[in-house]
Image 1 (cartoon, one colour):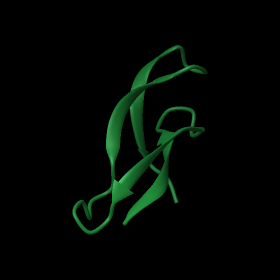
Image 2: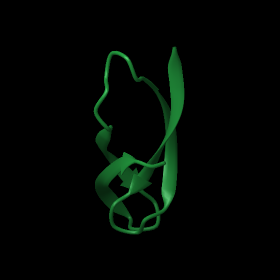
Image 3: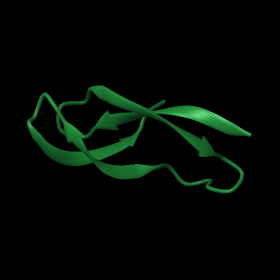
Image 4: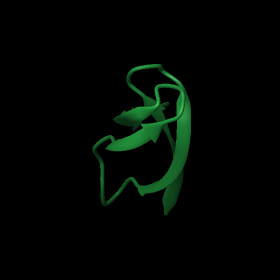
Length: 49
């Protein structure tokens, strides 16, 4: 049931992380604060297409 999604940094627009999400239980897009190694700080990462 879980699908692989990619998390994209909102500052530098790079895809840095991959994770799983069950789209039936969580229909909203994922937004997490993660570390971006290109920005050298924690930024918001949103679900990419």
